[in-house]
Length: 354
Ligand code: TXA
Ligand code: MG
Image (cartoon, rainbow, N blue to C red; front, top):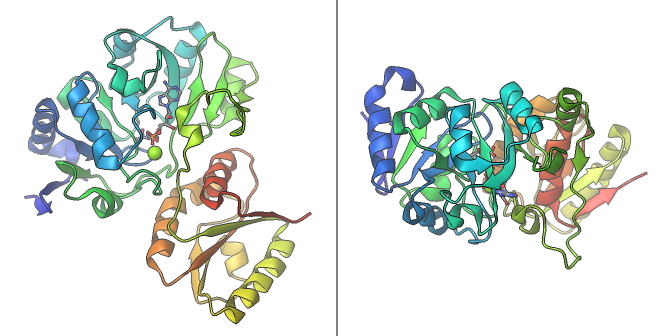
């Protein structure tokens, strides 16, 4: 049995592999040019037939996404890569064979079969094989590649549960497959691998350290600055992503200094009559007294921080908080992706204390 919210079908896919009827129905909706949100190991994706320009157009409309911000194409099998991309360097194949299925997206030269609307008019295409069993089962049931951005309204934190998708998109899409909470919690790493040298366009679930070790080559971070006349190497860089509706201030310092600073900020806000929400590690939350606190996990466990990040931002948005004060973490390993999202959520409100 399934529910319907504002016309959007909600399928329970926690037992998806045991529910071929649900997968067949979702595949039928996709074949008819519809939109189906599905869980991946990173965040929920909003899928449409990648080879059907009209279906893909609906993704941009539902999300309110600028049409020059291209989509990631999801595959079930490595063999499908040749159909969409050409000039696949040996480094790309090595990365794909090692990290797929998994949270790594490769940017490669596109073939003509990929509609321009998928790639925002670029001559490259971003592709990955997701690791979530429901995503893979859907891709197999559908039998064709799926274009899928994160299944949130443009500018909102990515969804890590079916409820997040429903909160943003109920009534705007045909169906959601509810596969529970996403384990990784931040989006895939995007790597431009044309020419064989890895250029990191977005940090994510696979770390630059892991990429460098596998390729025995440095994984260069993308150095594009917003104020240059050059177009960004990844269009997504020019849009504010991951923003909660409540302004977020990020404090970067040692744990002791962060504690002192957040107490001071709490005081200032109290005097202004402002309700503050805090986004803290378990360690700092244990030392700090406040009414509204979201705990992300241990400071020393970036994977835990990543899993809980977007859910916590969404809960703070729904809370009484008028301002969010967030603790900064180490950028080692997965911490790089967590800090990238926190900095984007903060915009210019980053406080660095030496
Ligand atoms: O984990 C993920 O990557 C999730 C799941 C659903 O797979 N998807 C995701 O998609 O985060 P989205 O659309 O929210 O972010 C995709 C990013 C955008 O910033 C876009 O600019 C960039 O990928 N992108 C897509 N195609 C590109 C290309 N050909 N060259 C450079 N950047 C590209
Ligand atoms: Mg997104």
